Image (tube, rainbow, N blue to C red; front, side, top):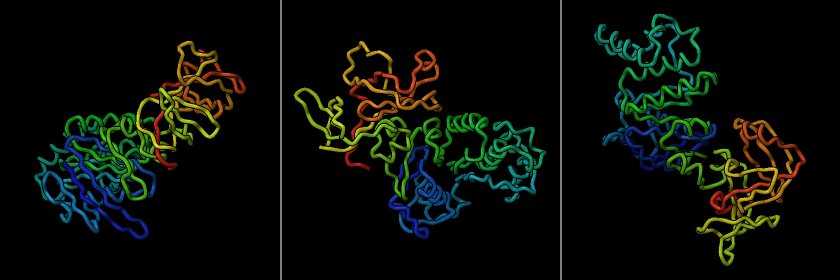
Length: 352
């Protein structure tokens, strides 16, 4: 288990503040944040490239806060791979073992084994100048994994890889984790967090502002920043009130939205995920509680199919799959109905 207790570090004008983490063995932990949020700086503290100003770092019951990076048993793969251009693929992978004067036969066997695991055996004799981003990433991983790290740290591992190769690297990382390797993976890409993590943390301005299982974090964000990061576009400034039989949220344009039972502030933000909203040309016959008539104002391509904007007193953004859109084509300025369940609304206190 990796434990960070109240880790702080000042780096110029930037400050990591009171970072507390507990990452269990075998976890795939994705640290999600924008550029400049502190995620790489935190990775470097864990690896031992820098020391914290205060706090402690423990790994498997051992205080490694001031331990040299070579003695931590932690592998770090840099965003730019840090491949040695003057060495072959074999030389890169074997470098750490050869520098410690290991037996050449044993080194050759270890390189062959890790190369097979990462499907790069055919590259061992080649130089690195003409390797693809995906191949370079595998070489960098192999060079790290050959040292049998207790913990693998990945700094933006997909950043320089073509989209067509990212699925292969994701499958590889999931396989490594399924074999028991604990991984901490920093990225700015929400989709990487969703597709890989068993736990996710969101870091902003040097602080971890939310962490938990991916579904918990992205379905129930603690603030607008996390919600926007997870792709939510439907934010409504509302006042919450209890009617005789239910809680409702009343928007600035007096749109009344029914909510599931819960505890609500007097006012704040109501968020609704785009995929939780249904859209149809005719009024639904299922007596949906939140059912509103609106006008289509915009239709744009999206990674899910199309994003449809509807003015129903407030502007709603709805994700529609390509298949659904073909079966039920929509036109700008046409009248539609939107509906969603009371459980779809998530309340956030405040406006941030």
